[in-house]
Image 1: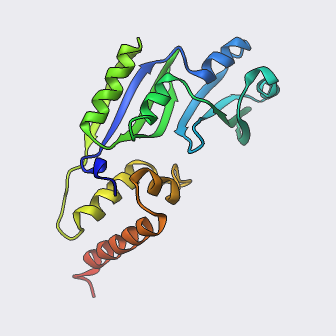
Image 2: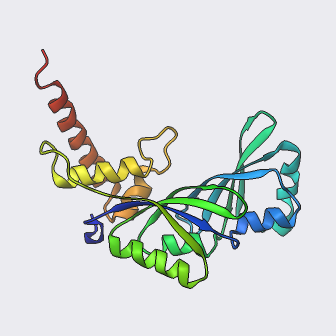
Amino acid sequence: MKNSWRNPFQVVLEVENRKCAIIKKYRSLGLKHFKVVDVRGSFRNSVKHLVELDSNDLTQINKPAIELKSIDSSTKRGGKTSVWLESKGCEVCNTILSHDAFLVSGKSGEGFTIKYSFMVPSFEAYKKIVSNMEKAGFKVTVVEMRKFEPQRGFLTTRQEKIFWIALRSGYFDYPRKIKLDELASKLGISSSTLSEITRRGMRRLLEHHFKNRS
C-alpha cells in the first residue's frame, strides 16, 4: 500500500460547478428534465456520469455534437431512463483525480450544484484539492470530512485501514462502485495482494464474531 495512504479521509464537497461537461452539453440541447445521480472516476483518464432523463430525450444525447466517449444505457424507471455517459471530465473532477484521490460518487442538486464524495490519501491532499478549486473560481462547501480511526485490536492496522477505504469507496455495495483491480491500483498494490489482505481480514472478523459461540 502506498505510503501516501497512511492517513486517509473520506470527503464530501458541494461545488457550484458551471463547467461540468455533462450539464453544459445537456443545457445546450435544451434538455431540462435530467439529473446527474452519480459521478465516478474512470481508469481511462475520463469521468463517468449516471444521468436520469426522460426516455424521449435519449436520442438527443446520441448526436455527434455531444462528443462523449461512450454511452451505456441502463435501467428504465417510471418513464425515466438512466444512462452512463463518459466524457473527459471537467476541472472539478480532474482536480480531485489528480491528487491520488479517487471519486466515489456525485449527485447534482439545484442549478449547477453537484455534491462530490471522494477518498483522499491525506489531509494535505484534501487541502490542495479545495484550494485549487477555490483558486479556479469554484464555490466550495465542505459537507462532510471523515478520517480513518483505528477501532479495535483483532484486525491489523493495515487490514482495518483497507477495509475502511473499501467500505467508504463502495467496494462492498451492490452493485460495486469500484472493482478490486481499480481499488488495488489506487492503493498502489497488486490485485492479488489486496484480495489476500481482505480474505485474511474477513477470516479474523468471522473468528472474532464466532469466538464465544458454540
